[in-house]
Every structure is written in C-alpha cells, then in structure tokens.
Length: 277
Length: 210
Image (tube, rainbow over all chains, first blue to last red; front, top):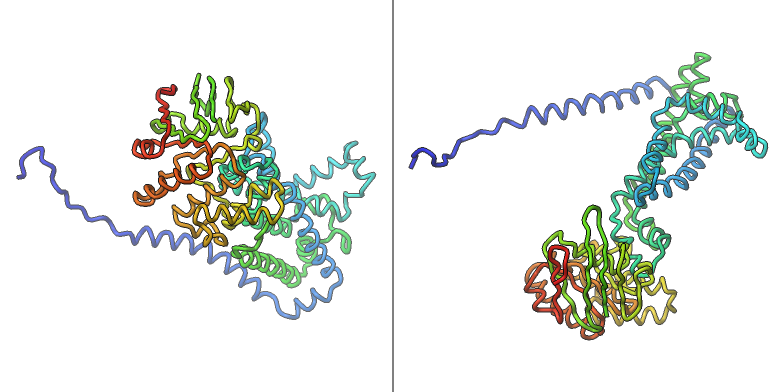
C-alpha cells in the first residue's frame, strides 16, 4: 500500500487565522481611533457658548450661507460636466483619450494653492480679462464657486467614469436595436442605472467644495462679508487667536458633512428614488 | 430573410472573412460553432452593433449594411439578456413602442398581446431582479418581439437555463417563431438544441460557414 510512487495523504494543520484577523483589526482600529478621537477632542474643546457666539456673528452667518449656496452650485455644475465626461471616457475610443484622461487628473494632483494661483493668472490673460469684462470673477463670489468647481469636478469625473465602466454597455446596445438613438439609450437606460453613482459623485463634490480653502484664499481672497466661506472663517479666527470659535466653526462643517452623508445614504438606498426616469 | 454576402468583420484582433449564408423568410436558422469562433461577432454585425469592412447584409431584400442598429428592425436577445434593471416588465415590452411614439391605447393592447403570447401577464409589474431564468428569458424575448421585427437574433438564449427549463424554452421558442412568422437566427454550441429547433443549420468553423 505504501509503495514508492504511490500518492500519500500528507497531514497538514493550517496555521491559526487569529494573527491575521487581529492585525486587520488593530491597523483599522488605529485609524478609526484617530478620526473619532479628533472629533471628540474638537467637541470637548468647545462649549454651547462658542456655538451661540458663532451664530450671533453676522460674518460667520454670511460665511455659512455662502458655503452652503456655493457648494450646492458647485455640485450642480460638477455633475453637469462630469456626467458627459465620465460617459465619454467610459464608452468611446478616440484619439487623445489617454491625454484627456491625464488632463482630468491634474486638479486632483496639483497642490490646491497652485490651482488658486493658476486661476488668478488665467484671469489676467486676454481671454480671462474678456470673461471678467462680462462677469466679474476674481475676488468676487463667482471666484469662490469656480475655485471649488475646479477640484470638486475632477473627483466627480473619476467617480462617474467608474460608475459608467461598471454599467454593462450591452443594455445600451439592446436599446439601439429597439430603435433608440445613442442619446435616447443613454437617457432612458444608462442614466437611471447610474443614479447611485451620480448621487455619490454629487456628495463627493459637495464635501470637497465645502472643505476647499487654498484656491479660494488665493483666487477669491479672505474678505469678510464678501468671499468668506467656512474654511476661510476658521483661518481668520485662528489668525486672531480665537481658537474656540475656529473649532466651533470646524464642528459646524463636520455636522454639515455628516448630515449630507446621512441624507445620501438614506435616499441612496431607496430603490425607487428615480422611478420613471 | 437574412442574407449575408461575403462580409468581413472583426472584433479586436479576431477577424471573420468572406462569410456568406442565407436563411429564408420565416425559417429558424441555427448557427453553431465552438466557443470563440466568431458566432457573436457575426450576430452583432447582422444587428448593426458591429461594422463590416466589406460585403453586404440583406434583411428581407433590404440592404442594411450601412444602416444603424436602430433602423434595421432586428429583434435581439443577447446571451446575458441585458434586461433593464430600472424598468418593470411592462416597460420592457413597451420600450420599442414608446420609442416609436405609438398611441397609448395601441401600446397597452400590444403589451397585453405579447404578455399573453409569452405567458408573462402575471409578471408585468415586476422588475428584472426578481425573475427566474426562464421568466427573464421570456421578458427578453418579448422586448425583442414588441416592435414586430421580421428578423430575430438570439445569442445562446438557452445556455444559462437548467435542463428542464431549457427543453421547455426550446419548444416555446419554436412555437413563438411559428406563431409570429419571424425569421430567426439562433446562436448555440448545442447540437441537441440545433436539431430540435433548426430548419437550417449553419456551422461556423475556422472562419468559414459550412
């Protein structure tokens, strides 16, 4: 039975999974601890009096209003641009596609201050001056939206590119055989299917826009009651040594971001959110 | 009638050359061949989803070689069915009719007619996610037949079904084809399926039709 060449059953005891699982938990735990710890420390540092003070300040109320309005406009603009670009990159092969793909990553990899500086310089060129002749942009409210848009849109494009990549193009092909034009196939089949990705891209764009500071500081300035958004408020309060108010405003931004994430999660899980689109 | 005359088409580095065959009107043609021999590429060329470099494709005496997929009047059921996840079964059956701006009452009548033909009336308000393999197959077939095409292209429609459902669906396909009079091109690699269904069997082997 045990002759040479005959296969033998080799007994083997697999090593314990515990070290692997424990490593995963410890490494994940360190990061989660830092995030939660940071927020708890912020909350512990402020008091209701600080919150009352920031809501009593007309400058901070203005910054809050401008932040909410500009972030929402930035999100709409970002989706308006990112949906077609994401779809184009996902579905079509054309000369220069790799170049376009690389160009769209520039706002993600560039330091935020450089984006602000580049925008400022662009609006000193003849084209920029011509635009300024029609709509004042630099150091005005449109500059806040444009600075937020430059970064937020790049993230929305990446998200939507992935979304469209994950949607089977075969469904569009079937729609074409049923009599659709490419546009009809997109609007009737792919767009409704991409709703969760669009919602995610919108959330990401909104959150990025809310936290944008560097480009706004350079391109829009930090003028109170004019181009001040919440991150600018944090900077201005810190610069005059009012740390408590800066932390309270930071927590306000955290709360706004958390509310948006919760709303998106709740609505995003509704199967029939966009029924009939 | 489906008449393919010396077409050349390609998918990536794969190329089909001088492919020619004819399936008479109202016949059930089965195209066989090994996996990767180009059956789906050929079917896509007929549907207008893949361009041809040379040769021509005639559907019912009409040269459709340069026509877009939307203008060919071909019903198409892909291998994975590609049902629309956001639409109900009723909307699948009405899809092609809505595109053609058919009057609402006529559209509802046609949807009911198709639902009865395919035995899916009880599924009309369901979405694809809850359908069994056989039910999904019927919905895909109904969607393809809704605009009354003269040609129906089926890409391995029975491959994902269990043996019992496959036999039942094969009979069903033949019955539907006889009732509607549509010319069918059915791609498969199953000889049993081919013998059971075909009026005409075509074999794609080494880039040639036999």
